[in-house]
Amino acid sequence: MFKKLLCFALFAALILSAASCAPKKEGGPVTINMWMMPNSLEPLRDIRETLKPFEATHPNIKVKVTVLDWGAAWSKITTAATSNDVPDIVQLGSTWVGSISGMGALLDLSDKVTELGGPKAFVPAAWKSSGLEKSNKTTAIPWIVDARAMFYRTDVFKKLGLTAADLETWDKFKATLVKIKQAKLTIEGLEIFPLGMPGKNDWNVVHNLSPWIWGAGGDYLNQNFSSSIINSPAATDGVYFYVNLAKEGLVPPEYLELNTAQVSSNFNNGSVAIMVDGPYEVRTLTTPPAQGGASEGITARNYAVVPYPKGPKGRFTFVGGSDLAIFRQAQHKAEAFEVIKYLTTDTNAQLNYCKASGFLPAKLAIFNEPYFSVDPARKVFREAIKYGKTYPCVSYWGILEPILTRRFGILWDYVTGSEGKLDKNQIAKQLDMAKKEMEAVIQQGKK
Image (cartoon, rainbow, N blue to C red; front, side, top):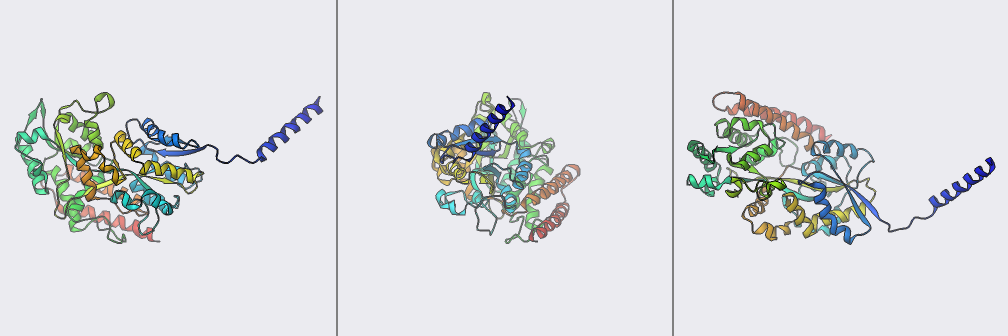
């Protein structure tokens, strides 16, 4: 009996060995693993709906999507970048591309760019995040775009005899805020505050200050990215103008403890006359409450959107968003590129996903679609990308941004904790320290 069992076991082993050594059929189904973040209210459903037409025309390619929380994504992605345990496709915040590219973890897609229509087919500021500065390599493809503009209450403006023209420049903008504050308006039982502005507890701390720094003629790094210029007189002026709005009482003090989502909620509920937000706020104000929106509130019936006010050196808005990249160690590079090509260039894929998420398209031609070219609010964002600006795509930006967030946070502490007028020298002091800390990182990055 034992001999029979032994013979049977040996026979089974030979069969399995033969099967494993047999040639595999080519062209079989391929599963692409994709990591992405929650870009919409129903992230998994929305991306699955967007991918349906692709999978219908590519029956041998299936996309398995894993949604990562934004808070945990950076750690998970950087861990994957230093190992071989990677997905095929990864969504990267546009300001993350430099750091992950600098690790050598991403596939160079330079030879594929013409298939996507070339760099000029994309939002210019977004394309700046497609690869490391001066590397002549494309390691990420812009997918969805974020830009900022100013939302205001048309009913408040009408009561005070104000128009959009009163938000055209920094001086007019500030004068408008003062007029709203002095009016002490109450509408439907709510006192109307002039400006909703988050403080240091916001995830957008650096993004919130950037348009004002740029509008004053300042910047973070010099032209060849070899040194920090965050403490320049122009940058100091931009920071001073913005934070002084809060110091002069044009923002409720308690708002400086809120984040962007909380400030937007207060605007949607009718408590704020003006705030800055992205295109997804338009989606919120046009979506029923049952679907997570605020279309039935007083603000939804009385709002308009205008660009940032023009500063001494021009009008700017921060442009961010997300790119799609392929890990260098990915198992299915060719098929992964086909998925990225579809998501970033197909008209319906770009348009439908933007409708679901509220973000802007990365492909310029999509802005000609009626969804963006007809609606007055979305048309403002269509124009905003023309004066949009982003941060340099350098390998050490991922370290510089936390430094800036910390220093700007300390600055906000000074604004909320001190009495009397705002001392510009105190702002300059914080920016001097930010420069010193940034320089240490930049010099290390040169080695």
